[in-house]
Length: 362
Image (cartoon, rainbow, N blue to C red; front, side, top):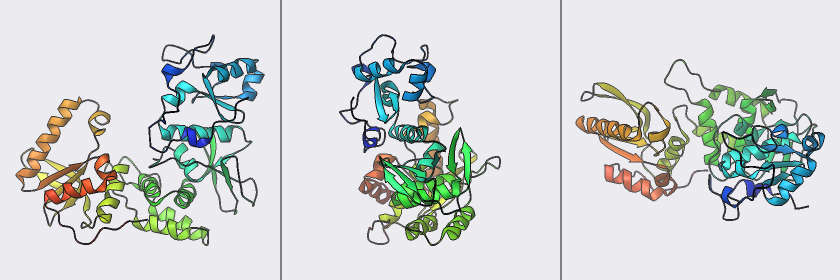
């Protein structure tokens, strides 16, 4: 039987991008009884498949379909995620890297009794963002006081301070504890997006943050001393409740690294031309510069009542209104932030001066 597919093959180095060796739906042979899933068709092995098209060998065996499962694996319609767990290749092909990592976490938990997710594995299950290359390891809480690392799974030793909760059928450590562990196990930028997504305070009074900075600091103090506490402290110290998206979180880091003055965030600016307030992602009032971390996704994902063309027109009217009060709008997207000198050119062209030499945070 073929070797299990390593976790790194389910979580490629670039977010949302398959390696050339990954199977595509068009490459998958169709064998009898194993058709491509669609809205109109039942999922592969529907009677033993979970919501992410994961199939456990034990479930297939109990349902009398073990031979069908192995036949599907041999034909390339199913791929082994780890020992005892298979996934439908179409489900992998249609998933981004973040979803594939979540699938790997779920697979590791399904083959263990009373498994408890923690660290970045728990935050992904909770829907918090995963910036950069997905981890190659799954993080679980050890059943006892000794930890271990085996078959791509790290079991963190229990210290008696872990609260365990159940969410969507999965056991995991509570959110503050999981976030702090994620800060230990992920790079600075990835950790920051997790923290800031959790503590973001929406402008709407009807919404609340998932947790507060005070809860994170209280958990941090309770766990001291612990390995990599300085790394965790650096993330918590830098984090703000004002970033609305991961792009804003990473933009703030890059702006700081490039040596530009730190901006104000969610800055309110009255625009008489259109008769309403604008909340700027970033603002430098002394220089009258408005920074907008757009990402083209907002033209398609937000405010579904408007089409892309109408949103672009409204964005132009908003920019004209900003210029009408003598401010200069500056827009950027993910590519500009990931290639930071492009963001530097955008800000310099808008008239923002560099205050110091560039550096690297984290």
